[in-house]
Length: 388
Image 1: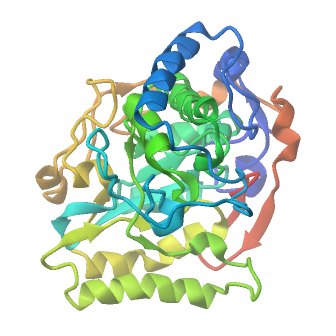
Image 2 (image 1 turned 180 degrees about the vertical axis):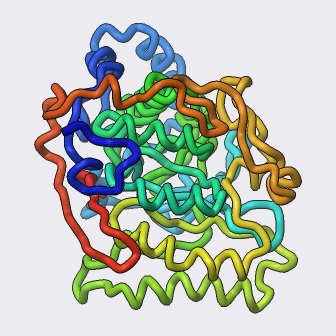
């Protein structure tokens, strides 16, 4: 059976499949979930990287990789002055160099929540996306390149439904541990697969775990990617992990703390928050559904990040436009323009599932995907990510 982009049945949604547009380009991309590096023979990428690499080495010669891509910083020494504005060191978001912009951690309009979700596309996100569609709610989706290769039809739904799509790297590891080439490749090939499959070229990215420094920011900026992190973290992704184990009640409390702050007037006269949430598992998506009414009641506006920032052209392609903040809050929340095989306003041109075939794709790493079936009250879903 082919994975059905409209089904909410686990057996349909998360059945591996081959999709010809992915098969046609997979030779141009790194193996999924591997640390990305330049593909041999990719002259366009190599030429662009050479130019960026020369600049970053000239501008930031002392900003070197930190630790391991797994987040292990054993033995790493670093100045307490935080010269590299390393987020993982002290949550620095304001680089002290003139050629870098501050990270985006909030939205300018008071009492507004910049709504977004990391780590997609999840193969089982249809029930969640159906809910957002029923609420006429748009969001910003930070997609992992390897997940797009695994679940291209699911990725296409974001554009079909009018959500904004941003880069979330190729393999979801700690970016400051990578070499310049690896940083470049993680961003470049994720941006490229979004263009190849979804038809748009993003102008935004979010570093996994928030792990970014000036060197990584600079490379991203040279790919026209603005760095978006967050002000508050629900820690929804930690549920069921750690020792002691993080409980659902703790995640509920994290959500409630932000909602209480809004109800107490914290955001009445200051920029609204960006909050870290995920489409990672059934639990994280169920939490988003559960707390949606409370968030809507507490905040005056709940909207995708591009619209919250008044960015009417969220992609390189100028034919895809988003509403302004004022248009969105007045009910004009549909985006417009063609994007690949879909239009951003929500019409599928043709049926993408007609070119998908059942069974394993030719992607060699498919078998590494882990499937965790979780039964929760909001709906039944599955996490199809290999890592987070």
